[in-house]
Image 1: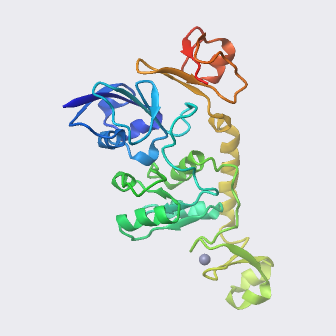
Image 2: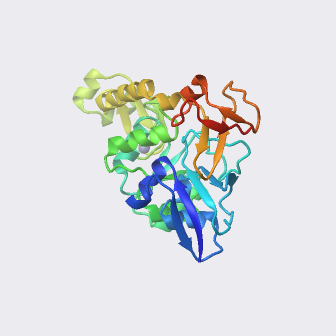
Image 3: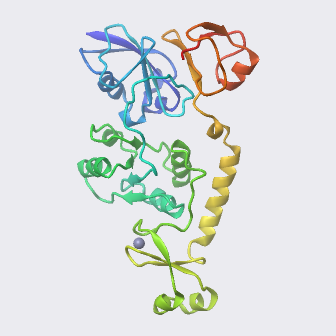
Length: 307
Ligand SMILES: [Zn+2]
């Protein structure tokens, strides 16, 4: 048997049994194994991992830890960044596109309402979902951790909540989409793009009151569904107001990657692009200015700047 000491950070702890959360713990296994395999065996799907540090060095998924290694694992937006860390996956597609499983119907609808390209997997089997997410370069959204662990899945996220509204804002925050909303862009029914259409062209499809009160219409280029300001508009307005309010109040949303890793396993700090110029690879004592930018460390702590 071999053994590593794991420390999973922030929301990655959601995947762990309570006794392992927020702390270092020993993990025994029959070696040798890749660190990706060990992370997933501990419970954390690989698409949720953004940075792995083994014995103080950033490593890729294929790294095989030596017996006795200390391994710290971080999610996206942990505040931790190390220059030259190996990329765990290609860059996120721009603009980001999603694929949802059949338990996330309401999340699918609200993502489309806010303009985000969201394909709905419906009743597709797990292997088909993984394959489609891979082939179409989509982020797979599912609460099925086994599905997220499939090796074909490159980009993926597990909404922790079962509440569709909480799921929506978790996804918007995770993918930095709070300022990317483009309302009235996508069909709620099929994800097709909407385009303006003359009232005369859709007149025969409208209810009498709609004909009377509305003059501007949009139509889905894929399925033909007609939209106007009366349909879904109240829901959309409420959502947009909430998006704006969260955008204003979410301090973390404004932070750029800056951070530190401080534990018995690793003592490294990376603070590139923040206007903070410390001596490279030197011990520093944390001052007020630095402590203000780094959650969890205090004035007087000693850290190492890695440039
Ligand atoms: Zn449509």
